[in-house]
Amino acid sequence: SQTIHQWPATLVQPVGSPLSLECTVEGTSNPNLYWYRQAAGRGLQLLFYSVGIGQISSEVPQNLSASRPQDRQFILSSKKLLLSDSGFYLCASGGRVYGEAYEQYFGPGTRLTVT
Amino acid sequence: AQSVAQPEDQVNVAEGNPLTVKCTYSVSGNPYLFWYVQYPNRGLQFLLKYITGDNLVKGSYGFEAEFNKSQTSFHLKKPSALVSDSALYFCAVRDSRGSTLGRLYFGRGTQLTVWP
Image (cartoon, helix red, strand yellow):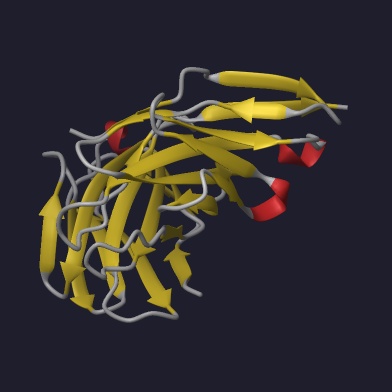
């Protein structure tokens, strides 16, 4: 089974500072990778997804960016944080066999507070 | 378009009673359906999925879900609730057609509280 690692677990950053959140995956190869944000402990907002190294798709225009430098590494970044970037960030990994309904596996999350 | 609705923000049940968390979906083709559970400050944990076949799907921790195509529903159930089942539950759907993207569409979540 897959294991998703995320760090840091918690982060407090001032407005205007840069951000880098890292996600790594074990137990699979060539996965689809996803970044979600969860605000106020409820719904999930898909931010970015990637089907391969260097391939990033953005769901919503925002202050964030993502990169996939290696097959099982996914990074979420920002040059200048906004207060509205606060939230719980989740990385997920899913299978990519055509037509197969592989479930997504989630990491433990990073709690980001922008002050 | 694909979407999921969880009509109840909150479900409260007494320990030992049966529980149901509701989910309805909308997809263009045949659905792949999933349930996840989230404990406070944790990631989502996969509970079960429906792909095809038997409409009653059994999953982790004694949970099951019933797929109803005519009602486009996939309600999560458990015969006897435990206090430890208290958590946030998410339903998700994916269209069986399409690319290898594997994107899931999530509902807003239902907070389940089981009291002793």
